[in-house]
Length: 420
Ligand SMILES: Cc1ncc(COP(=O)(O)O)c(C=O)c1O
Image (cartoon, rainbow, N blue to C red):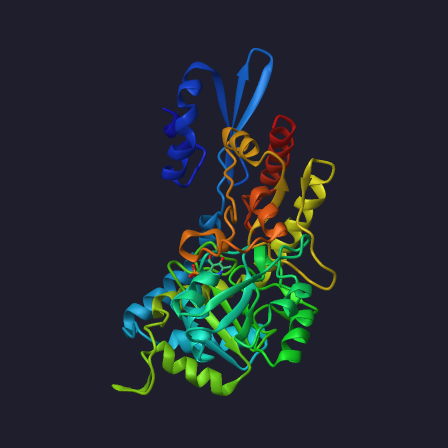
């Protein structure tokens, strides 16, 4: 009965609904409940005597709303791939690389199999190997440091800036040794690291900088776009990313023609001519079907980026006065809010209460990378990273949040933090 009513008001994902609704199904049967369509979601108003409580069926990221906008272009572009049948390195890949390079403002772009493989291949192109050191952040997704360790090199962790959560340039010099080969900052949550300051340190030591821009594609730093700020920029097209495909994907950007050539060979098992393998590489290619999907999504990407920025700013404005720390965006930067992440006290209890209100949350990231079993460096201790790992909480965020969604999120945060 509940799912039937939800279907009537147009809730798209039945799996999402059943997951969200199961904990409160019993209550819904016994209470006087009504369903109110609100924007692209639905709110259930439960009336218990004089008290009214809301239950929102909010999605963490709404990919369906986006798909509805571009469905005709997607269908046409996917059909074109099925018609020509070049499923590997098809014409869509080249068209996508040209458009992405122009968007970022660099001469070379390679679309690749994932954000992780983008980082791995960038390090391989620089010839990183065993015994060498790469300076990076411990406050990121596992892949950032995983690729360093996969090549036998060692991640050297520097603490992050407490306002931006990105690598603190002030800590880099002290971490440089004769074995240091590169600096790998992450542009976390959609805002670029402080690349001018990082590059200044890198230049003093002759080190290349690689941006992990998996969460920041579309963001700007002093008017220039993420992934075009350093010798190598890498991003991810994982479906939940600001620009996502319908599977795994990623891209590498570079200003260096020689590196671009090496990367093309590494992406294809180290061959530039078929069956002549001059180096070790991987299968790091993006499927043509995913390139077709990304071409359709690129048509509306700039508009989505604008919307992300406006929504993120509005969200932060509305949360002022509540006991939370909202994202801080540095001067001369824009964020695409790859995640909309707060700092809260009593995180678990806030999460539980938000979940009871039908608002999903996520923690990006609960364990510093040097505390992960696979990358353990017990001697490392970085206070800002460790404090953030205990306090950060990401809320639903995507460019199709409605005014109602925003109201619900603000009301939910107010209620959850009041009672935490
Ligand atoms: C900061 C960061 N780096 C790297 C990656 C890896 O990207 P992918 O999942 O496409 O391999 C991610 C993905 O979550 C990420 O957030």
